[in-house]
Length: 616
Image (cartoon, rainbow, N blue to C red; front, side):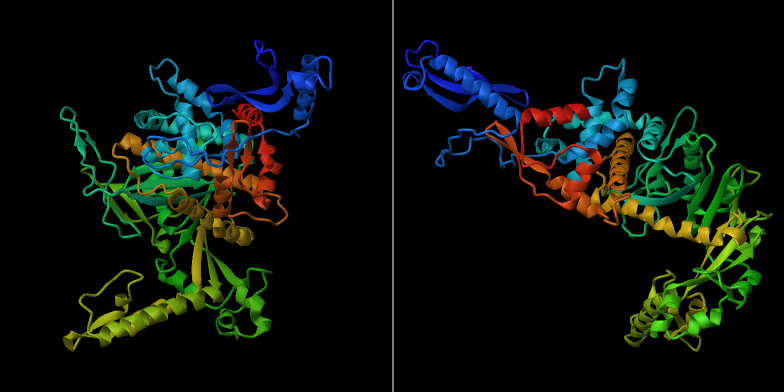
C-alpha cells in the first residue's frame, strides 16, 4: 500500500492506494480515503506526515490479514458489455491446486522439457497436458470444449485447440517412455505395492459408421491394421472400438496400460504389457491377478518363472470330469473364516432365516485341488502350422498349479433368483408364442428353451439345461501356482480385490467421460487415452492420500470430484478473492494432507498467486 494524492492541487485529497495485478493486467485502486488537506489541518499541523503515518498503520493492519476497506457500490451499474453469445461465469476454480500439487510431484514438466528440447513447437506442452488432465477430472468434455472453458481456472491459461491436437501426436510418440516416467515418480509419492498386479481389459466405442481400413505398404507388402475395429463389446453397440488393458497395484493405483485394435484378442495384450511394466520393477516379486478371460495357458506359463506367480479365475464348467467330481464331492471343505471342516450339504440346506446362522450365511467354504495337467483345466494354446499360420488347440503338458474351489450360500441364493426370473421369462415366451429363434447367450432366457422333437413348431422348457446350470450355483474357482495348501485364504483375499480395477474403468468412463472419444487419427486417440490415464493416476493418488489413515472416514469419487469442482473463488473489485464455497470434512482433510490452507473465506491476490507459484 502507498500514499497517493494530486501534488498539483492546493487542497489535495489523500488516499491509500493499492497496486493490483489481475492476470497479466496491472492497475491501481484507492482503497481508503484519509481526508482532504484543509480538513486534516484541524487535527494536525502537517497533513502530509499524518497521511504517511496512516499508510504505515494500514500496512501493519494489512499484514495482520484484518483490514477495513472503503468500497463504493452502485446498484444501478450494469455489467460490462461483451460480444460473447453466452455470459460466462466469473468464478475461478482453485480446487485444482490439490491436483496440481500431485502433478508437479510427477515431474512432468521435466519430461516434456526433455522430449521437446530442440524442436520448433511454439506451444507449451506441459501447460496443455496439465489442463487436459485437470479438465478430464473436474470438467470432462471434448478437447474443443475444454479449450473454450479454460476461464474457469484461476490461472486463466490460453490454449488453442489446434495446438492440443499437435500435442496429442507428440505425446503418443513417447507412449512407453511416458508411462515409465509416471510409474517412476508416482512410486516416490506414495508406497506403491506391486506384490500383486491386477490386470483387465475394457473397450471404448467410437461413434463412426465404419471401422478403420488396414494399410498395406505397396513396396514391402507389410500390413498395418486399422486402430478402430469391430469387436466383442459387453454393451453390444454397433460401433468400432479400441481396447485398453490396464495394470494396477494392490491399492488400486494404475501401473501401466496398453491400447490395441478392437478386434484383437485381449489375451494377447497381457504379456507384452507386463514385460514393459516389469522393466521398471527391478526384479520385484509379482503376482499376476486377472479373471478367467485373461488367464490363458500362455499367460500362466509366462507368470510361472522367476519371481512371478499368477492367481486367475478358473471356469468350473471347463474342468475335466475327475475334477468336477471332486468339486461336488462333499469332503475336505473348510470354512474360510476359521478353517474348520464344514459339510457342503450343510451349507446348502441350513435355515438362512435363522439369526443363529447369519455368520454362516455370510461365510464361505473352500477346498484345494491339485491340477498340474493342463488338459484338466480345459485350457487352450496357440501354435504355428507348417504354413506359418496361428491355430488354437487344447493345451498339452503340465504346469504345477492348484485350483481352489469356493462355495458361498449367499451367491447360490443370488444366482438361483436370477435364473428363476430368466426361466419365468422363457416360460412367457413359450406361452405367448414369441420364440422366433433360440439364443445361446449366457444371459438370454431363450437358452432354456428347446424344440419339441415331435413338432418342429412347438417349444418346451429345457429342464435338463436348467438342472445342469443349477448345480453350479454358488461355486467359483481360482487357479494359482502358489502353494494353495498353505496360503489358500490369502489367495482368496487377493482375488476378491479384483473389483478395484473395475472401479478404475468406471471412473474413466463415467466420471471422466473418456468415451465416446471424438479423435480420428490413431496418434490423437492414443494421446487422448494417455491424458485420461494421467488423470486417473493423479486422482487415485489423491484419493489414497486423503482416505488412508483417516479414522474410518471414506470419501467417494463423486464426493471428491464434486468437492474440488465446487472450490471456486470470486474476484471482488480486484482487491481480494472471496471463497464461494463452504467448509466441509473433505475441505478440511484436503488442506490437512496438502497444507495449502485453501479453507479461508477471503484471499489476497498475491497469496493465491504465491500458493500456485510454490506448487509450480
